[in-house]
Amino acid sequence: MSKLKDSRTVEQTQWLKMRDDAKAGKTNSAIRFNNSALTVDGQLCIGMTHNIKLRRYSCTYLQTDGVRDFGGACSWGIEGGSLDGLSDLNLKTIQNGVRTI
Image (cartoon, rainbow, N blue to C red):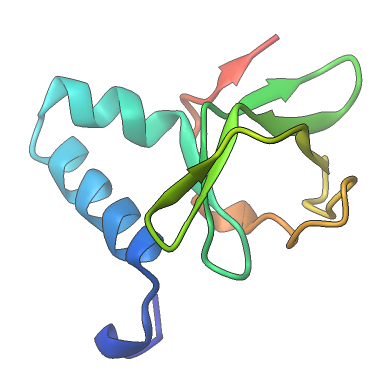
């Protein structure tokens, strides 16, 4: 990421740590990393799913400022545009291992 370290959100820092742990071969971190992504605003999307038939991504919940929000649907089009009025998805943070249905 090109941002200065001090300007990262808690979630961006957490995602980078998961990435580093996954690269180091830590299995649990690799699973969490493969099923996570970031929005353009730096929110952490946890429980990512790629629906081939509906051509969209969705997640179980978002984390913002260290607080997880289980409040509703979070979905994005295949190009990363929000379908729910949330921040768009940062497509560079989606992993090949994301669960596909």
